[in-house]
Length: 452
Image (cartoon, rainbow, N blue to C red):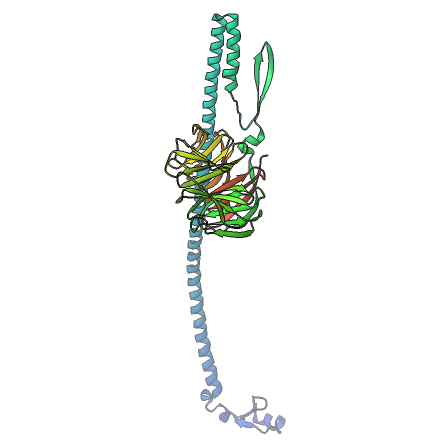
């Protein structure tokens, strides 16, 4: 039996029988026997590369599996971390909402307490008026039952002038129609107040905000022409600004420790010192002192109107009036330690150093009314009065206005609106302007005062 011999044709990479090779691959030059081709096949480069590639592929698969396992673990850890962060953020939100709630509740309680107190005060006033009316009715009954016709006539006139003439009925904020019977006829009497006299009608419109560069403000004033003056305590100087807050000049070397400043006219201001016993008149044109008026004491407050200064010391229950024309003066006693003073007509307005209360006095120093509402008063530093007798107060936390009778108030500016603690304040009745200067940050604010 003849054995088939196989050969390998490299051109086709196939094995063929010898007879096939001789018939179809005569021209093939690279033909090898089967034995020669398969010899050392396991040691060939191709086999070795296949083995290496498979081993490398296995290792890569292991690395990929290990990495995916780590990813699973990382995802779990990341989930827990995110859940923790979300929980923490929610706690922060809840805490912030709690703070907002507490703030609004505190503000609400404060407003309710303040309104309740005002209503109670108003009820007390009405009850007092009712008692007075009851007393009048009792007097009328006595006259009716026991007096002669002449006594009745005189008693009626006395009641009309002495009793009813003193009654002032004020209803806020609503208007009521009250009924009064006289001579058998019903007449309606409408109780109303001039809107300009009611503090709830007062609003402020910002006209200018400017930097005074002062770091220790002690006073301010508005000139008739609208220019503005701000005094600094230490170092001691005055700064003049235009009516819209633009810097004009600084005046130095006047007196040490300027404690207050007041306007005399468009060209002159008067200053006082806590260390000197005089009033210095300063020319704004020349920047020099042109006149000095002696006082009985070092002063902490000054006001001027219609040719007369009024100054107050820092350590006594007195004030001194000084006339500009001839330097004549008079001293009168008061019942408070005044730290600032302003006046309107025959009334004086001042801050008591010991109690931080606001007082209205007559020219004899007798107290007309006292404002002592601690819900709004903290540490008043300066006051000014408008033409209706309403008192504007610079407080450490706000600016507010007190009604002409001392019974009502309205907060006009908060410390957030002023950015700092207000110290000096001045009102000009002709211009209807209010100037407010902060104590230490150099900021000043000029407002138009609205009475509608």
